Length: 111
Length: 118
Image (cartoon, rainbow over all chains, first blue to last red; front, side):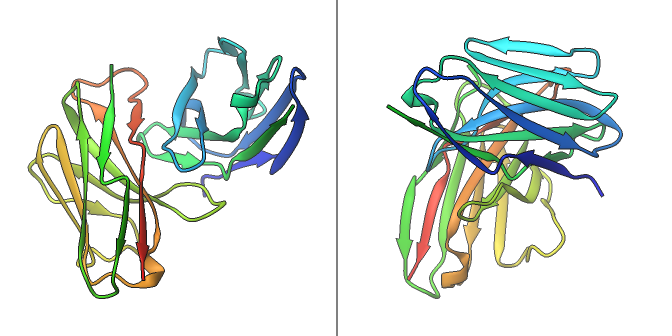
């Protein structure tokens, strides 16, 4: 069964600090891995998409890494801002384009 | 580009009534649209996949007669929750993929519709 597990479930950080979110997956055959940001009461917005051959990708203060051998990914948020408070969802696409969603990590940035 | 809208953003209805939710791709043609449901503090769960001009494919456990999906054009899909019950209260999100696609076959998500059934 294809699964995506994220950790931690939630975290609180102070404004300006960095944090790293983890994603482990068992999806096979693997096509790509995406990180989405979902604000409360809104739809997910894509941050990064990585294929098998890409092991890092940045989008502003967000940097995602992918280790396809160990089936792990991380999302690093640098110099966090209050607007970074949201749920971050790891989504893995299999070769048949079926998406497997992680449960998300809720990030709260405090002033 | 690649904007998906949903209407309404919020709806409150009485138990037993039907509710229609629209999903539109505003600046692109969508080969395929997806409907998801999300309960509080849980991730998105795929309900059904719809292709323009054909019947939707429902995930296991999703009642097709209760959740009617119509994909009449390449820019519009509708989800009708029939005879709604309080347990149908949830956040419904649609997504769409570009006609012609990309190597990622990326899905673009709408902003969601909050349904509350009293």
